Image (cartoon, rainbow, N blue to C red; front, side, top):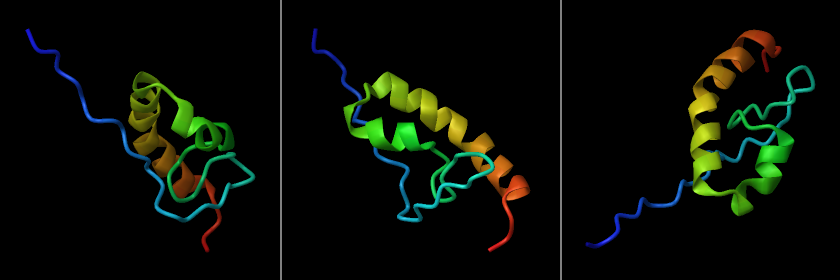
Length: 68
């Protein structure tokens, strides 16, 4: 039986790399500095877990970060 492989998780980076001091999260993608640094070496399962957190993080960033 052939194995089914999923494509690798692509980066959520949109080239807006600004870590907000209040949250420690990137304004562009919602990841923290450690997640950004380790992204290329992370297993896909960890990337999927982080990707699932990003919508809530981005909402939080919109409500806690000062307007630019």
